[in-house]
Image (cartoon, rainbow over all chains, first blue to last red; front, side, top):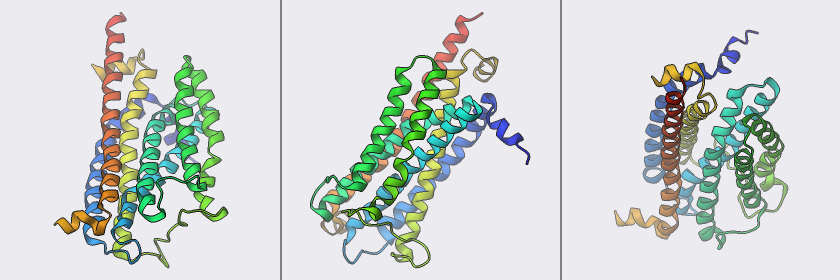
Length: 243
Length: 51
């Protein structure tokens, strides 16, 4: 197998240029899909027979929740790649992902809470799904705090990578908490095949998932450029890109 | 139109959810752009100081 592409992504100047080129495309596609999905979810999708219009919170809650898990998993994989192959760009990608993931975990907790009040009668319960998602927020904050507390970037990379990898055990706990324990939170909704929702409800949700993923891609690429500049500010390629 | 905003009585939960969710989306973009601008400024200052 040819691994040239992998080594190319390990080069800071190559990644900086790649991020500069692709971020606007990811961002533009994300905004376009978000607008269409919002119209589909708020206007075209029919009422739910049980939850009425309250179910429409799913169009912001579920993509945020999926992103909070996907970003942590990406962060842990990037951290592992950084540790194993000593790839600085991978550590930079992990560091750039953490604040984005933390914000989307906050969005998940708040939108979930606002959905919980009319459905469960309470904004918060120490339920397995809610509690494990709150732990995810603490993992993100712990990762960022640990990085900030260690002055030497290489030591910060290593220590925070170990934390990110250990913390990934929480991801299946969040995902399967609704199956393993009694939970107020509903189990996962089937969107394809024998779907639990009609197609006019499903397509805006699938489109919003894609839009949020593309948005993460765009913001990650912007933050990655910042991270690479901070790490390599003395390098000759930085002089070239800034001149 | 008022029926749309009422969202069958759940508007007081639904609209804040969307405002916070998409507010966080917008905030993420703003914070990322500011982080890049600050990193560029720091890198330029360092380059000006070095021979």
